[in-house]
Image (cartoon, rainbow over all chains, first blue to last red; front, side):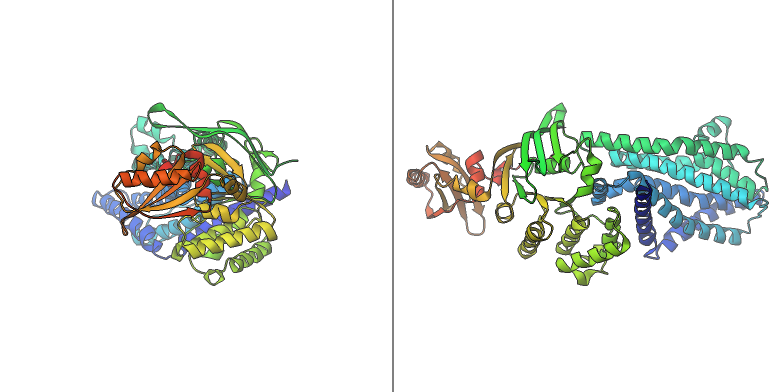
Length: 269
Length: 331
């Protein structure tokens, strides 16, 4: 039991290490993953300024822009990772090795979180300083709690998507593209989701980041406390409770299905 | 006696075009003993990779049974994975942005090697495979020969009891391929005394490396024995190589000659000569062949009797050579 745990952690750490090392070895990410998102969120901030929107909207945009880094990471570097691993021949090596697949996914997720946290921190710092975002943070621990719950729920969703990508390859690739912009819109990355019509808000509530984003904004920008954001905390915990076991089940199911159908290592589908 | 690898009536089918079914393996029963280097020889699409994927737990059989070290590959796949590794030719698993050592360290962790163990093992393998000067070179900067050395080092990192090699020298130059073959034989016979299952469509590779060879075609095992015995069985059927002064002629007319078991034709555009390799029931068939070729207004430039090779064994079994037999791969 103890040996298994150590082995799992060792595998997860190795995969985390690969991601962190690979992700930061070449410094051009500073341009692509910080400068470009800042340009995008600048456009929204100036748009709100032009419309004489309240100053807090700049804060909504900066936090949204920061969280987009995590969503993009989940979508392309977490969900799509098994697809890439399959194309390069690495997936075959993972599956031949006596390792729990979830340990690999955990390592990928943790590595992704570390990499993205570096980028997100840079976006948040630069965005806050440049646009002088009004901050009314009273309970940093509540902000941290919601952030952590959001990240866990998001990456659990990423683990679930990873199984789909493993089997469906390019079809799932298109699904990810299809998910990107609608989720940006529905989750209110650049505006508070409460301004959307009720039905759209209902659809948006199926995405964990909607709750995370709204909760973090309320705590950091509007100065709300833990009691105000309890529904957000509850919703995120429910997401985690559902998505985590579901991702494990999906991974086992997809692995068996693809072994049966012979699609596990089939490339260029 | 328990075999190291054993399959019983192994069948694997795939969905083919327009709802048809393609049989990649057709009741394959094979037993491989511990310490043996066993070759599976056949053209592309014969079912070799499918066989190795089932044994390495990457694919489920449609029916039949397969055991690796006594473990059922379907029901006890986790136990199987602990004692095997797989090296596929033409594949370069790993991360291009990481160095050779970093990649090997990563793969060592998938087998639970301790940091000191991993370090020692990586150093040893890189020295043995003669690419230790590339330790800190990124994988994406390596030539295909060095990538294959890295791939092989990865396959040996866990000191597997059973090593699956799927076309391990595919695309390598002659010298690199020879060095890798020598290393592998040495590893299996002297150092590890491990069992190797090798798939290849290079006759010389199977001949040089394997204790026993199974010839597979269209999912069926046609013959299985030591390369020597397979060739010896053929000595009663003489083989000859003929050079004919045409590269456009259709040599199907040879099929009408009685006493011919099979033949291959290899045209050479540069010399304008086609080389025919013919296996016959007896030597009297060769005079008939020459007469028939002359009748077709073609000229026989040379004729040489040849020692039987594994290619001749294949031709005698299926009546054609690898090139003509190659079908699109299923997996």
